Image 1 (cartoon, rainbow, N blue to C red):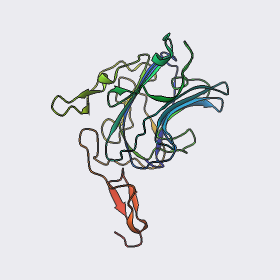
Image 2: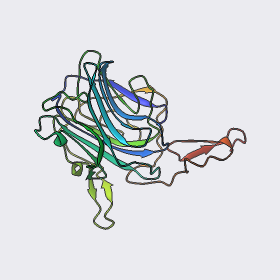
Image 3: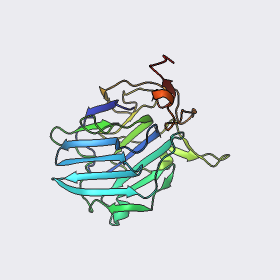
Length: 258
């Protein structure tokens, strides 16, 4: 998505303590701050899901100007030729801190964490809030910075239920690999949605009408998707100053017009 991002204004949530985020991503660039999902009420109340500069997955939240949570994996995610399925299952009503937010990648829960500052029990989750001028961005920070560089597909948000990754994916009985369920069923809740299900569609395809608008850039349908994985150019090799784009499926060298 590079400099492209999506945005919408949130309404009143079904539940500001329980929800799920599910998205398939394919990275094109490593080693930079890349926001996948962000909720922003103001400079003192916000939260986001991102890849860090060290290629870790992190959930970070701020409430009333103070850090409310920071969960960061020990595992790095540096494969630029594979799709990652990321699921966040959030339920701050849970008595055990590690049950309040669970990170799954390709159907497996990440349990080895480098940072473990969980939301307090029954604390409002800033990823689910809606207050004041609150709005939600996909693919960047609230101002369009820290953009995600890569491709996204089948982006789901469930407001009010912490869902298992098996709602959105399953293990292939032949290969043993995690694969996408292209048609999923869940109750989205007030702020829930399904976007990017069919190419670059940002119209909500759930039972709601929580459509997004284009904040900046251009959405390009690359045909590379979790159910039809394409080979891509190596991001570490760009001969002669050429530029990779469209999820590293396109290479262009302006100096030679190739």
